[in-house]
Length: 147
Image 1 (cartoon, rainbow, N blue to C red):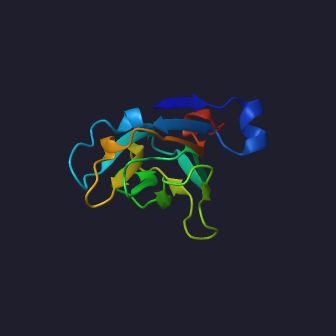
Image 2: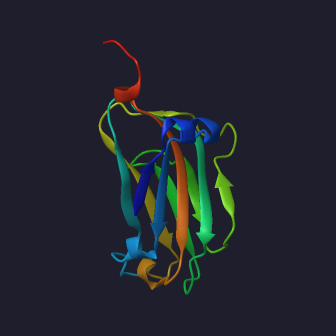
């Protein structure tokens, strides 16, 4: 996985602060049928806010599996975007309007990418795939906030 924190001049026009690039090498741990692979994208600190204008781009589709979906959200928390199909290259997925609110971290927690293979597939069986996850995170440490 690659993580790029966008600079101000990059973040302002796009509306996103972070880009995570995931590919099939990140799925190597998924060697059991119908077993999810969870990858920590970044650690959210207390007071950080993840805004619900998240975008997933399927740059290169997953192959050799009958199903592979992606869910983004805080570990063990409510998904911000759920069940994105990774089998169609060139597809973009946005958070549906008014379905999920901003996620304020009240404790330190990982923002995760959860890959879910089909019932008879293993995540590592996909030999191709590149997935870009664009996120907007307002980090408490970067805001001009007085205690």
